[in-house]
Length: 369
Image (tube, rainbow, N blue to C red; front, side, top):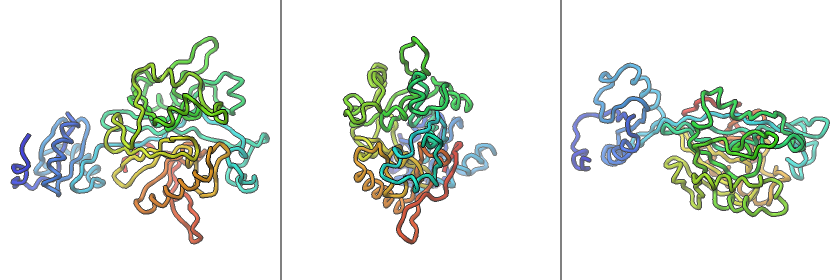
């Protein structure tokens, strides 16, 4: 490793540092470089196979140059930017009672947003987020899956008998063994059920991601292992034991995960369920916040709107208010797990001070901004 003084004496007007063979080594060099050469921008390009100063873009191929230019636009000077992309992936869908999903809000308020069927049920997505990062595939939640037996599938309004998430991943060219990390905000069945294989009569439950490391917050983990009588039905018996038996489990107590590494910050929420993990993902433009059930969809951006499933609705409102204030100050977007139409949106405030979703996106495909 060359010392700081030697880097400080560099006379070549370096534009880029490009690396692909060893991202960890690249970051060590990048940390030293950006400390003494604030003008340097470090961009990680998988497959380039080169790490070092590039004095002029003419020295690299046109294909590499195009990749550099596309990445450098969102990489601030004096920083390192990995090639991180976001893709929304739908799992099994549901129809649940609208009154339960909107707590004390009357039907006349929510039915205009989500018209109910003849059983008073409204449509819900179980949307997951796939992050490609450092040649890893990170899956934020797994949806409800297809683990229920037919009678329970009918009770909880799961529409498809097959494992929709696995089919959606396959359509992207991703097999279950390709997933490196599964992040579970909590272990309610509509967020963790997709970790299990589809129900088959006489077959014991089994996990479907054979290589994945599971990341779970400590409070959410303990709640799943020892639920309260009020929410016991929301958890899957035996799932914590199956995950623990893999020896690929990280129970996180702070705001960082050793498995996820840099670029991810974990917040806690207690209004919906104790210790709900809210993951902040750093992107070149701003932060994308995976807020799970704290803000399940655009309708719940309105502060007073809570779910009947929330353990502490007033606390959930306070947590949303703090989140939205922070997002407006720093800039950021929300990823929605349950909204049937919208995958991601920003936050805005109208003249009356009411929050609402802004610039909604119905789906994400390899989003890199």
